[in-house]
Length: 413
Image (cartoon, rainbow, N blue to C red; front, side, top):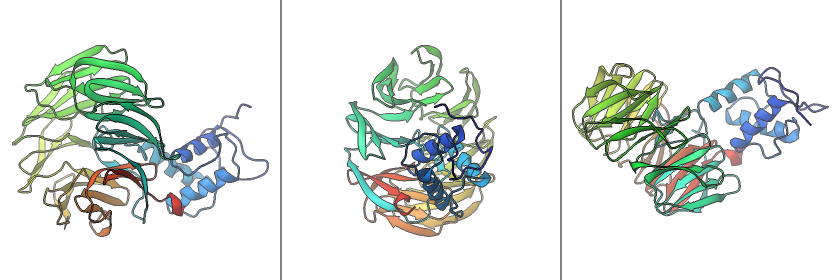
């Protein structure tokens, strides 16, 4: 039977007789199912299981668990979905490399072992699936069933996600169907290692020859741009522009492949450029972080820490960087002034990520959780080296000791 159409948030949804039915109910059910909170059929009928799922979500976001999907509920749900909660599509969350996800994760998380993996190259996540790039396989692991939906043999250098596909860089660039793992298309124009960017029907990819390609989904080259050297960092896409580093230069191209600006910095740009608001951030191998105007490339501020640092993640108006000796530094993203610092006394092992109320630093001796002001919350996996951390569903997925682990609040909701 066809569901009556209702715009989302056009009415309150609650359990009553007869049960409320509609497309808005179906949307809520599907969204809560992606978060692991709804376990029933997505049928557009607001019954007891839908009410329980609404209560669980309200408990998670720390509002009174009434079971009524009202204006406040819809506002928070849509904000989280629009912000990409539960979606980790490339190296540092999104194609802007912000490392930020709008979830509340400062509370105690339940740790559970998921599956054994061999040398994970990269992790990404979308909805209920974690996509795992191992030494010789790509797989989609279902967080609901705790099983692989599919695994395909590859020797990947990196992966990233498009809306319905997994983009695998393994010398050639291959697009796999996210649901079946079958090859959709293969781009074999060059040698690809870095994660590709998928935006609005276009795939942007950089090659080992120092060339940036724009490809359509028929496998055709739309345009290409050759940098001055063979070395290019993974691509960043923000506000319709592409950014990358090449030796000491940061480049900005428009979506037609024309150079908008190029700024020369000191040292070697080793990690992806991050775009946060109207600023572009780059770090070099000499321990400096540079803040540039994202539209013009003009230098706004720079700081040197006397040792190498990882590219920052972002939380509210802060850029949070970690030095290789384990010092966490929060800088004002606008002016570069120091806001706080915390010494972990252990080196970082993977990129830092931030959530709405917590910062997580993977180290060689555990996963350290900090509050936004720098105060320590807890160390998970104490004494173990953490190789990968991403945000998935309403929790985290961690690679450590040859296994994937889930850190989730779902058991207590």
